[in-house]
Length: 190
Image (tube, rainbow, N blue to C red):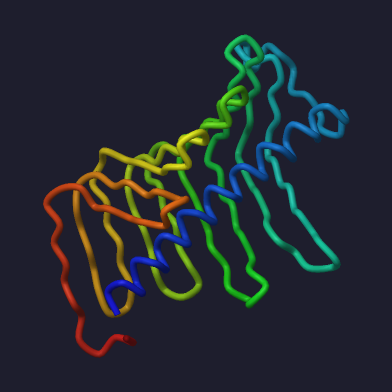
């Protein structure tokens, strides 16, 4: 049961990474197609392109696959970084489940495809699992998701807390690095 719950969490993190990669590709396509309105440069002086109140939806064969909302996005061509303010990405599975990823800020390094989520990062599944931390970093070349911060994973039958996390997407492993404490709840599904 413990292994199953960790595999479910690993899938949540992998899906979150995939959603952010798709988001990056679609935002880049939208920018090159000129479909978004630019905010005057005076309001976001350091950005080459700034967009407000973003909402993107990917629909495949009449089924919504993911949806992105963000308060704002800035593209800085000198540093080749896209910054999203208050991103919220919802991924919809074919089985009818959903995964919601939120943070105060998201950064996409467009040259390396590395990504960071910063500030009050939450991954919530419709199955009742939640991962909370302060930051997540995705290394595209190594296919790893990491954080040095406190991590809390909670479901209806357990709660796990520890400091630092490494997820190897290729090996499909999840490691909590230090101070792991697990609490089993009574009456939860198992």
